[in-house]
Image (cartoon, rainbow, N blue to C red; front, side, top):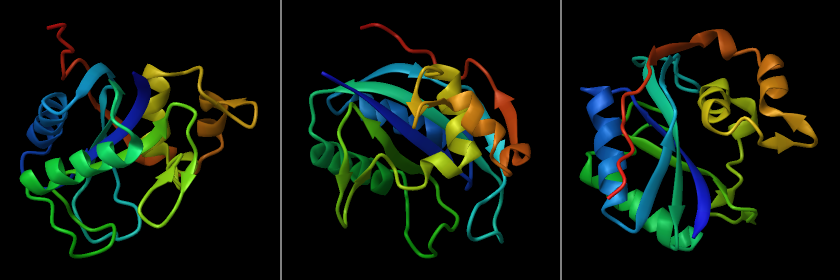
Length: 167
């Protein structure tokens, strides 16, 4: 089983319901949800003419390889109505693989670690909530977050919104 960190976000419709539904669907597909961060409400990045996002990070365990996991993620996004119309545009659900164990992949379909995660407070703040010992180039997440200019746009929305249940 490999430890994996996923970022999940939504800014259309019942945003919290989409986040919960995504985790439930992932758990039905060879993924064990280990920990889930609080939800943060965040300003959109890239394409600004859209509603605010709800974002969270989940730590999962899986035996799927990164490409098998990506395929399941894409299926879950499609089942939850994700349409890719505008890059960085509005979406019912967005699930990104941030980290997959110690694996590094850099190809057209998949980049691990996620190529922009270290620049985005809406990813690093919830990641820090559940995995504060993660480092990059010897710097702890908390120090990296301090240096980000977009951290002010990340506001705590809800704690304890998803209960991890041992089955």
